Length: 327
Image (cartoon, rainbow, N blue to C red; front, side, top):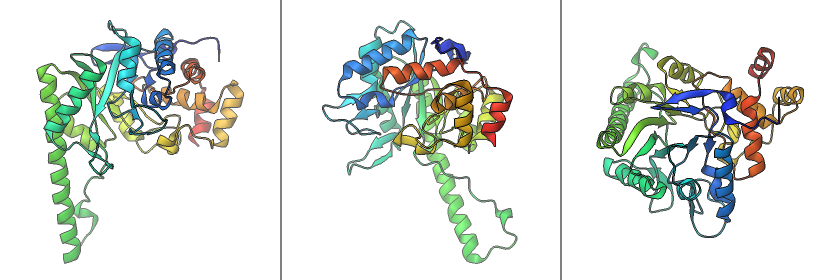
């Protein structure tokens, strides 16, 4: 790999809604960890200098008190850091945000379950980003339910089993109706001009099918990495439908919110050694090799890590590399 090449465009482009963006983007969740907000501003501006034109954020990306909840000092919102660093935007960046999760009165994380609460979250994003229209809003599902069991799975269920299946089906119908209502509320806000495009996060194929009957879906964001691959089929389906698949936790893998995975597989270490790069860079390159519709949004609050991530856009993995990583 040419480590001197630092350009997000090296990974190619994808049409996200009505904009063509570089497939190597930037995730803002970890920007809020450092109490010195000047560092976050420098990271964001450097990302744009290096060709990043697709940012991922959310109003609930904040510290202290947000999803990662680290670092002392006053509350820092990723959306406000983006505004401070990059306004006036002048169409330099396409900003994808999320709604759904919210902090409950008892301090636990829950889900905005009504159209009114979703509207408040959309309005908060508009206010903190300083825009009149949000480029893309992903509806984040906090609990990804499995589809209900089919009655054909059991030839002759007992009365108690049949009752359990009936109750499960009733719950599934209720959950489906609630999901449709919530996505429909976002579709209405899209019609009002508050949102340009809609997407989904942490979802199943059933969610995608249902949402697509309500309004166009341009993006699916799910946890996915070389060692976290439950959504291989969904990734393929998105490609077939021309929908961007945007993995989060591409670097963290099963460690998820805890951050970059420290334990790497032997295969990752071998491939990294052959190319003279880090295992984290191999993880990002592997992500981008999964399809032309797959976008990467690695996040960091460190300038050095940012440049390492962007360099992975130019890392070409061979068929042999990919086969080794898939074993």
